[in-house]
Image 1 (cartoon, rainbow, N blue to C red):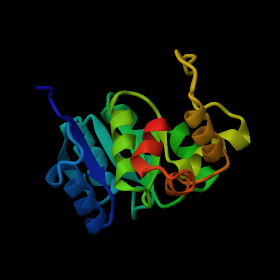
Image 2: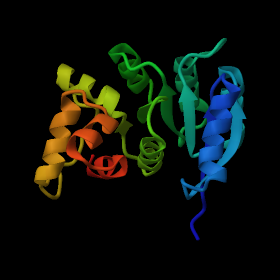
Image 3: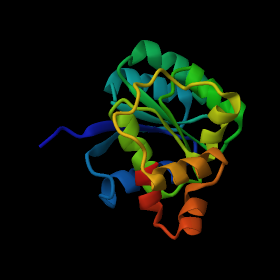
Amino acid sequence: MNKPMRVLIVDDHPVVRAGIAFLIEEIEEIEGFEVVGQANDGMIAVRLAAELQPDIVLLDIQMPGMNGYDCLVQFGTVSSETRTLVMSMHSEEEHVFKAIELGAKGYVLKGSDPAEFELALKTVSIGSLWFSSGVSSHFIKRKQPVAEIDPPQTELSPRQLEILKRIAQGASTKQIAFELSLSVKTVESHR
């Protein structure tokens, strides 16, 4: 059996932390992950990242005291192997690009479905980048690549192209699923 990925949850709202921990550990919907710590502010988050050396930090941006951006800067020095997945209610371009510039490996909106959250967590855990459908369109508008990516090994199917087109137009996963009469999980899988 593989060792579970160790997760540190950082958010100043106790209910959010508890809900994410519940999704990961209690429901067992998200296999292969364990919560090793929780922090309600940036100072505690940086200390715990140094102590626990988690595989993934789920990080809120807006917190009192040291915010998530400051944490991202610190994580690079105290826990260089840790991957950070930003969880935020802010979908604005400036938040997304600032998080990426500071080292975030993904950006998931707090309003996302649990299925999208699971895919974001799993994608970041294997070293790939993840961005919620609600923020993906920022990259297309800027015509700025997120990172150098190897060319795809296979061509996209017509369904995948159709979903990609709708994502580029700014449609949410739920909206795409509804419009194409698909489940959210199917849309995320194609995504």
